[in-house]
Length: 150
Image (cartoon, rainbow, N blue to C red; front, side, top):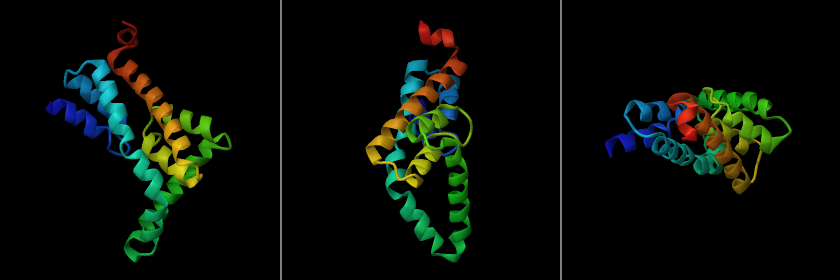
């Protein structure tokens, strides 16, 4: 049970997300389907909160001296990453999240969707598809693509 919780909670951590949680699951001896499902579920937990509260939190942070710089860095990072998504919002967001590199996961994807004013349901669906694809790629790399087929 402890290993299951580790994988689930690690997948919620920004930057690490499921890209780190799935290999941890493998290292802890979990089967690939369990690692995959736990990581996808955990990775998706913060998404609605980011989509709903991102702009309010950034705006609030900008109103304080201490946090203004951090808020601007987060906003600039998100704007820079959103250029990779481009005008093809849905497909761009899915592909952006599906690429298993640091800084291209559900957290940044949700911030981009918020910045682009995507509808909540639409954004969640796109992010989920991207997370599922990233999860399959990371699971394939971690456990071996042959394990996914058998």
